Amino acid sequence: MADSKIYSASTTAPVNIAVIKYWGKRDPKLNLPTNSSLSVTLSQADLRTHTTATCSAFFPAQDSLLLNGQLQDVSGARTQACFRELRSLRAKLEEQDPQFPKLSRYPLRIVSENNFPTAAGLASSAAGFAALVRAIADLYQLKESPVELSRIARQGSGSACRSLFGGYVAWEMGQEASGTDSTAVQVAPAEHWPEMQALILVVSAAKKGVSSTAGMQATVATSSLFPARVASVPQRMEDMITAIKEQNFESFGRLTMKDSNSFHATCLDTEPPIFYLNDVSRAAIRVVEDINKKAGKIVAAYTFDAGPNAVIYFEEKSTDAVAGVFKERLGHLEGWTGKGESIRASATE
Ligand code: 2P0
Image (cartoon, rainbow, N blue to C red; front, side, top):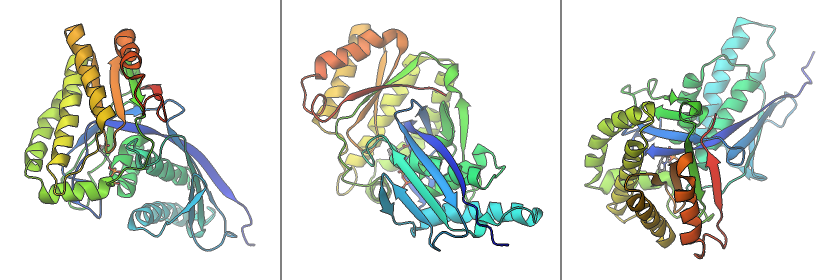
């Protein structure tokens, strides 16, 4: 008898913000990076992608993906790679147990909602692909670990592999040409460092000018600073992991700012140059410098992804010295009070 059921699973995945940035692919097809990276997952409810994956033998033959109410093209190699890998894992379960409905053969319907600016340097593709992979894995009742799922999410979007975990997450670049060892692992859960806070300055919710994928390819091809950056990352990764383990904010903050500046320097060194920071971003950097000068040590650290929005890390005990000063100093700027807002998100989960 034909299977008339509709199968469904829902999940959410949080945004992650890298403190050691991923920028550069050694294999663009498999999204294998030129360096390892490390992020903090911001799991507060208002910075997530919510995804429902549904399948049925009676759905129209084509898989579909609706993001924020708009139909997306799922024919691209990255989405197809995720669908293919997940289907093949499900097919193995179906082979082992003939009672299992043949979900791997049914068309998929994916519905996703972001509640933060899409493609504005707030890691929307990271949360998006992480939620997509986990929702389908749940729908298919796969037993694979988050590390194994991170290998699949990586093929959707590199940074997505890090959004399968909470807390502090390393994406180990791996050595294998096949990418089997290029996966994410949790360095520490968020509870390890309960003092850690993040302030997100939404400077602009506009879509970014140069996509990360195109930008990093151009940097790898043209920047003479880039090899020096790649060479410096392994030591920085090691130091960052130590800083996190020891809850050493000064070291965490120094490394975070150094890595953000190193990444944006290679962007500027790209031909043609890539500018992600704007005047409000640079004003935010100056505010952090002033806060730290006044404190006599690093109590605030900025980082910027492929867009002008700032993420400021600080410890709870420095809230007045950091968040208070930001409001006072940047409150008058357009992009802060106008279309932008500040979102205070804690690093949780
Ligand atoms: C990061 N970014 O580590 C860095 C910092 C942007 C700047 O990961 O081509 O969207 O899909 O693998 O993951 C953005 O790159 O790029 C990114 P693809 P992705 O968070």
